[in-house]
Length: 348
Image: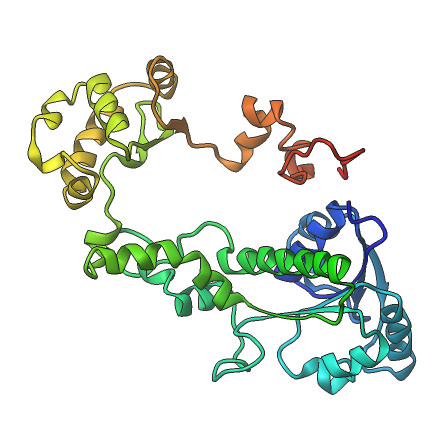
C-alpha cells in the first residue's frame, strides 16, 4: 500500500524503529541510518530484538557529524517522503537538519520527531525511559496491586509503543493529506509522555466520574483477574457485564452472590472485589486448567487461559490466524490487521 513511499529513519532503540517497521510492513522503503560506532544500540542488547524491529529496512552507516556523510544524508532527503528522528530536542538543529534546514532541501517532506517529553516545555531536555513517561502520565500511579504502591507492572513498554503508534498514525494522515491537498511540509512532534497520557483518557474520565476514588477503590475488580488452577496454571476471568457475572456465578456454584445486594452492580463488585476474588481463588484452585476450560467452553463467558511467551507458537487460535510465525527465538509477529481487497498485501 505504501509502495513508492521512501522513509529515512534516524531512530534507535524501540519507539522510532517500531513505527518505521510498521511503515515497512505496509510497503514503504525504509532506509535506516546508523552511526559508525556500532549502529543502533539494540544490536548489542538482546539477541533477536534488532531483527524484529528492523527486519524489512535497508541499513546505511553515516556519521552525522562528518561533513561528507551529512551531504549524503541531504541527498537522501531530497527525494524522500518521510524523515523520522528520535534524538533529544535540539540535536537535529545542531547537526544542521532541523525542520527549517530540511524544508529548504525538500519542502514536501513529512518530518516526524519522537522524543520523551516533546520539543518544548520544562521537561524537554530530561532523559527518560518508559517508566519515567508512565510516571509523568499518571499510568504508574494506578499500576500494580490496588492496595499497593505504584509498580512497573505493565509487562510491555507502554509509552514507547504508544508513541510508535501515534507517530505512525500521524505520518499516514500526513501522507493522505499530501495526496488529497497536494500539500506537504508537515512537521510532527510526538511525545512519549503525552502518548501514554492519551491512553489514560478513559481512566481519567472514570476517575472524575467516580468522585476521585482512592487507588484501592478505583482499581479493584471483582471477578476480573488471573486465578491459579489446581495444576498451577493461570486462567483469566473478566466478568464485567451483568449477564456474564450471573452466568459465572451459576456455573461455578456462587449463586448466593447473586442474592446479595453487595454485588448487584459492577461498581459494587469493584468496591467488594476482595470478597469476590477470595471466593473465586478457592473455587478455581479445585480443578485443573483443562477441566475449567472444558466447563467454561459450554457457557458464553469471557474466560481464557493465560499464555506464557513460550506458549504463543502453540496456541491453536493464534496459529490458525497466522498471528505468529516461526518457533523458539526465531518467532516473528506479522502485521496484525488482516486486509482484503488490497492486492498482494503480505509483507511477512
